[in-house]
Length: 88
Image 1 (cartoon, rainbow, N blue to C red):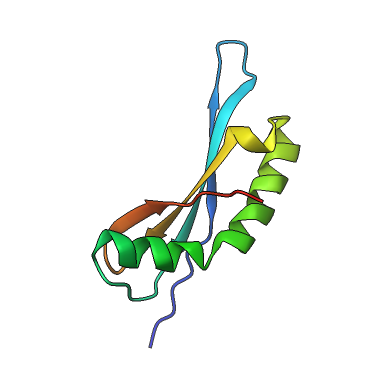
Image 2 (cartoon, one colour):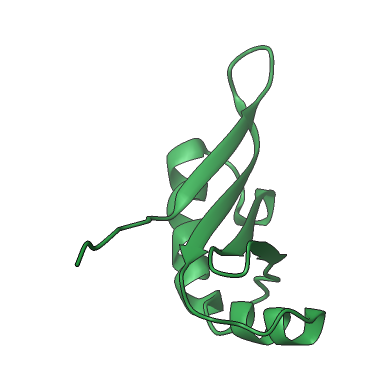
């Protein structure tokens, strides 16, 4: 049996001067989810606390405000991704 590890990944958009302009954290999950929008949103919402922490770290490392860092969960088994609203 072979195990695979997929980690979260930040993507940072930079301006011509090299400064960060926006960022998104993509968090890859292997859990099974229903394919409808409501099921995806509910499953993605369970990961919001973890994504808030990632957003805080990416904001600090890039100098962006936390509001400039988005988050999405990528459900690998379903081949779907879902944005997560990170309101505190």
